[in-house]
Length: 288
Length: 288
Image (cartoon, rainbow over all chains, first blue to last red; front, side):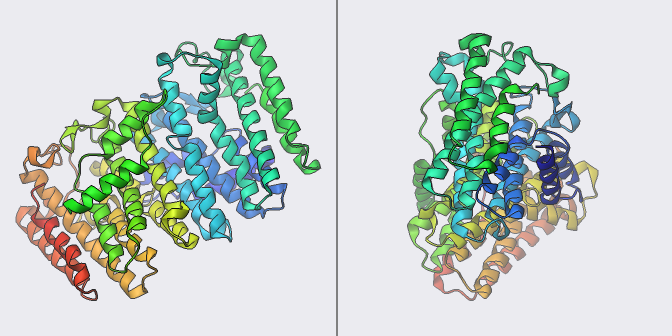
């Protein structure tokens, strides 16, 4: 993952505008938020899923860069005072703390827009049908009926009952949809079979839930320094989490079960899927 | 334009998600901001430019709807407290006043995302090359090197000299780029000749500047009630405007000249361009 993170860093550096002109603070903020940090898990998934099918590495990296742009945009906006109001992210001040709120909002918007620009560009894939499919699916995954809807649900956590169904739906929207896109993108670029696409979808779905439960556990038990962000925020903010419903022990068991299940979805792939299997292990064993 | 506004209203109503679920406030805010108001000038341009070449009306309306989604997103975000901090828009409370800041940010994000989803969908155009081109060009027009860069430049107006070149560049980014996309989209969908595309580009460019100067004049001289938004805001906020540099009389002359020039770019089109000619007239003669 560290090697892949280096590749992602390099492609982001290439995709992001250089800071020039009277609007340069916008580009500085995009670079500040996107470069030099993060696990790069989602772009790693895109690259590894694409490698299952021998998709060209340069094109995979580009799509992986777009996926990370969208993830960073979501972090920058989630951290805003009007949202979760966080001061620290990836071990440094959040974008609105480093610059200001207006700049953080605009930088997020520009990162989101850049992702669509990259996906639709001819050098991302030779087949325009594939490029359109990437754009349509990313927009569906992170739009009002996807990630943004999940964020709204998160903010309205005080207004509905926190059943297991509600929390599962919240996490599927807020985290799961982009995990699914990150994995499916590799398959789409290879025009993978429906069976392979189904496996990627199921893997991403279970991995996303396992990852989210582990995230919730880290919020309860984790070390803020190691995570590079504040801990113990969920309960204070009355967030809907799996811990709240299952308790710590059952949540940990559930994350473990989901990670194992995610790995089993990869049974139809050979040893090229070993890194994806290892990611499922990492998702539940990590301390950051 | 009123007839076209009705068409745009109908297509937006169809494109926007219906408010259901615990995240329904997001969909309510998207509909609140997008429906029931506005001149619908940009989608009108898309429809009229497409009609020059006999592009199918249903497809044109869909692209016009995407253009308006992007424009509304830009208004919702521009009105935020961290940006221009406006309370009234299109004659009603701004989205963050009607709902809250978080909801307004998310609704803007979801409108932007929806635009890309619509452009990339198969029912928007039979040729995926055209759909990709629409996505790439819209993203370029409204991204960091386009509209968002213009908004950043607007916020940093105190940090550079307000020369005619700087203000022209600011307006080209902030307003002009989306005008150009709105017009070119119709030509792209028809695979219009380079000569016709150039004419649309030049028309949109001059129209956008004329429109912006008229907007600046309205800010100085206009009636807030008729405009549906606050007046006399630019000077108070130290915005970079054409009025500041040219004064009211020369700015009015310049808008007139640009509108005439915009019309002349349409000389290669027949009477089907008459409504586009009338729009150039409207851009400088309007009182709202």
